[in-house]
Length: 401
Image (tube, rainbow, N blue to C red; front, side, top):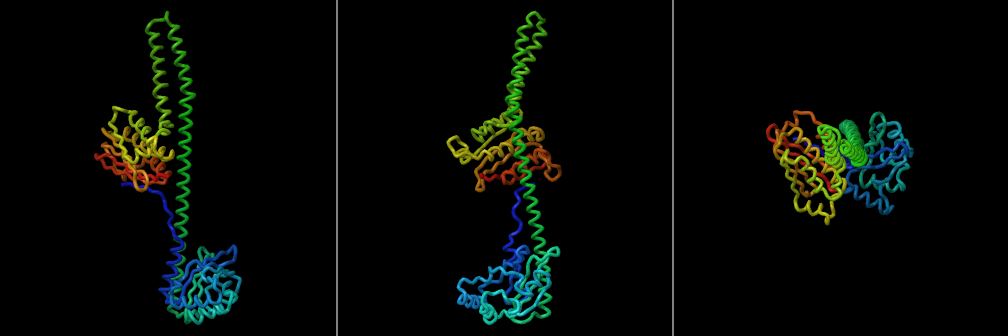
């Protein structure tokens, strides 16, 4: 089975940072851990993740702080990194520092009592601040609050953990870049599909108007020529008559059919009438059955709300590509197209009893690539199941909006 679907965002940054600090506290037995993001343009550090404030010692310190400043929110306070030498060392020079709480908080807290509360009630006596650098630039700092200075064992764990954090952030940045590139590709494909449809409309209108008018003029002039050739041998007159009939066949059937395929006007009436017309074009070549459940018929009915023009066009083009593939390659006797209202939107199943193929063993042709572009452009997903001698089944899932 081959499946394709739209690309979803790869990284949840908030969850990533929270997992980092939770794992860091557990690994080092620190009293509290926080991760601050560095904004070099403004020279500010911003707390983005921290250990739980429900820890008993943190809850006690927080209640005492609110008694001093009722609106105090230490976990959301952005700090100027030029406030004291320790912050400058961490964020501006990328140096790992170890200090007492009072040294690290110098000039940071709006009231000295806040630092006293953290020291006495939460026992946050010491800070070990580790800069997190990616490609030589400081992007943040992982900060460990402890009751005692770090032991050699704890310091080794902190250093190893910070390296892991750097690797995690680099992978997250890479995943985000890949996601952005995939989105750029999706947008590019969307533009190509829209551009192709615009060209189809233009060519269809040109055939229906300009080309048909010229053929009509040629047909009329051939008729005049036939009338004027009464004195000519009957065989020659018959050739002119046959030529006039051939022009009429091209004008009334082939050009009209091509024009309708390029820009199916019946889609303005409804999806099902347009599909019915499409699937009867080669009547007799293959037996085709179109089915739709009651929910689909109710929506597509002239009295219903109707499917959006973009969804109608997508379904029409997908069925058209599948139909062309069946006629050209499948050697099938029957083909069935089913439309069903699904929880996520509209489900389209296309099945034939043809010769089948190995989806993994052949290179995609233009038809499959076109289907992939159409479904991706609509934000849907699709799959194809087939094997030699067992026909082909295509399943398409499309959102209604």
